[in-house]
Every structure is written in structure tokens, then in C-alpha cells.
Amino acid sequence: MGLAIETTGLVKTFGAQRAVDGIDLAVPAGTVYGVLGPNGAGKTTTVRMLATLLRPDAGRALVLGHDVVREAAAVRDLVSLTGQYASVDEDLTGEENLVLLCRLLGHRTPAARERAAQLLEVFGLTGAARRQVKNYSGGMRRRLDIAASIVSTPELLFLDEPTTGLDPRSRNQVWDIVRAVVARGTTVVLTTQYLDEADQLADRIAVIDAGRVVAEGTPGELKSSVGAGTVAVRLRDPEQREAARAVLATALGTPVRAAADPLALTARTPPGGAAGPAARALAELSAAGITVDEFALGQPSLDEVFLALTDRKEASAA
Ligand SMILES: Nc1ncnc2c1ncn2[C@@H]1O[C@H](COP(=O)(O)OP(=O)(O)OP(=O)(O)O)[C@@H](O)[C@H]1O
Ligand SMILES: [Mg+2]
Image 1 (cartoon, rainbow, N blue to C red):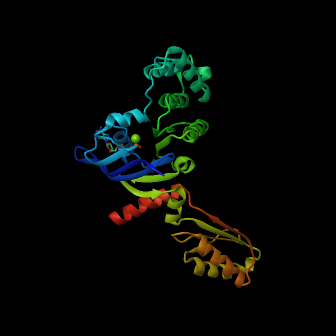
Image 2: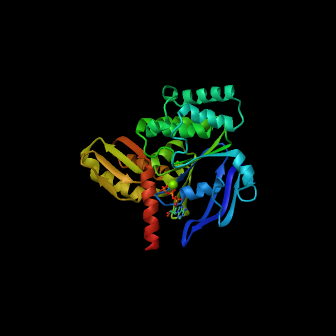
Image 3: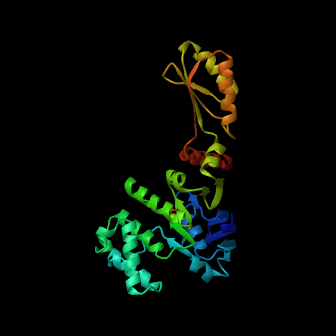
């Protein structure tokens, strides 16, 4: 599969601060790529460089095969950006905003009206079409903003924190919209501070912190690299718990916790893939004559991954 974005050593400095400090990215075409990081990590700065709104100080970025500096106009023709802050006109209605954008893209008025009506319908805004945007809720505004960015189908869509501040229902609606956009073949680069959002939507994720990529991979790879998953065991006989605990500790090589429930044991899985050690642990429990009623392998949440990555960084910096 081709790459929609390829960057090497991308840098952006503001005064003495390196907001983006040598970022390498490879975004496969036709996927959702999550850029995850805390406040000030450099997400918006990175996206603005890729969308040709900011000029990199060093490094190189190809977007859909075009250099963002030397072929900025070609990049602009192919990408669309929904910024962190709403960019629609507050004094116009939702419908007027979309019709205006369609007209700017060269549609005649009847076609523009038709496209606007279609988008308002898809985004659940038909009822609010004739209301001024300044009277929209945050969620309605966000949806209108995304609608505005896909008036013409871009090859690549940047969504900068599309669901920040939205309630769970509106977030789900935005997620559905993103899935629909990708299903039509658009590549989406999505920045977010929400780990569950990246988990839900992204095929791959780059975790960035202080202007650098600290981890990259599929959500599953990121989780298993941290190895903070759990093995949960439920025994038939509480008398066997001490024996089971010893077997698990040896097989997994991690501390085993006896839960309040006298039949339950839990342990962390070792880094680098949990399935092998867990299968060995189960076989050894059985070989030791211990009856196991339940054996469950859980992956860590991305929250745990994120905290672990940040911890590790702080530990090595200290
Ligand atoms: N135009 C600017 N002038 C000076 N400093 C800037 C400018 N834009 C960004 N910065 C700084 O660069 C760093 C990265 O900012 P950026 O907006 O890229 O972060 P972010 O990851 O998008 O954060 P957030 O999650 O808060 O949106 C921050 O420390 C910010 O203060
Ligand atoms: Mg930002």
C-alpha cells in the first residue's frame, strides 16, 4: 500500500522552543492515522506543516507524493483541514455556510444547494439548517465544521481534535462520520488527546510528546509493547490458591496478586506478547492438578500504554 504522508526529520521552532523536534511519520493511504499526545506535544504544529499552513524549519514532508514546501499548491488541492477551532462563519446559518463553500468550489447555485442539503442530512443538521451558527451547540458546530471540510471529497483530511469538548453521543456521531469518510477512500489524520478515540478509530497511532514520536504502531502493538495486560484466573478450590500462585509466578515471571475473592488471582503479563507465557501458565496449572474455572487474558487500555510511555521517558530523563 502507498503512503499518503511521509516525513523525515520534520522540525518547527518557535523562538527557543522546538515545538516539533524531528518527526518521522509514514501514513498508509486509505487509513485513519492517529496522532496522540498531551497539550503542547506539537500535534497542531505538525498538522499545520503537513497542510502547508506553516513552513517547516528542517526536514522533509511528502503529502500524497508532493513536497509541502516546493509543491504547496498541489498539496492544497488535495487536502482539507478541520482545525482545532471552528472555522465556519458564525453569522451565517449552517446551510448558508455550506452553500457558500460549494459555490467557492465552483458549483452553480442549484448544485450547491443540493450538496449542502445532502451534507446537512448526513450530519443530522437538517433541523438546524436555517439557524445562525452562533446559536449552535458545540457538537452541532463540530459536525458542521467537518461537513464544511468534506464539501468536496478530499484525498486527505486532517482532523485536529474533532471531538474535544463533545458529549459521548456527539463524539459517537463524529466517529461515525469519520468512518464513513474513510470508507469512501479518504485518508484521515486525526489528532486527539483521547486514547479511547485513537483506539476506536485509528489503524495506526503515533504517540508524540515534546515534539518527538515516542511510540508508533497499531493500537494492539502499542498495548502489547507495554505489556501491562492482565491474566485473571478463577479457581474451583480456594485451598489450591497458594499452589496456583506459585505456578503462575514462575510461568509468567511477574508478581501475582491474590484478589479479595478467595478463588481469584491476577497477574501482569510480561512485555513482548502475552499469549505464549499465558498458554504455558495454563498448561502448568493443569499439570499441577489445579482446577481452573476461568482464565482470561486482558490487554491494557491505551491509557495505561500512554502513562507507561510517559513514565518511561521521565525515568530515562531523570
Ligand atoms: N505560533 C506559535 N508561536 C509560538 N509558540 C507556539 C506557536 N504555536 C505553537 N507554539 C508552541 O509549540 C508547542 C506545541 O504546540 P501545538 O499547538 O502544536 O501543541 P498541540 O499538541 O496541538 O497541543 P493541544 O493538545 O493543546 O492542542 C506549544 O508549546 C506551543 O505553545
Ligand atoms: Mg492542538
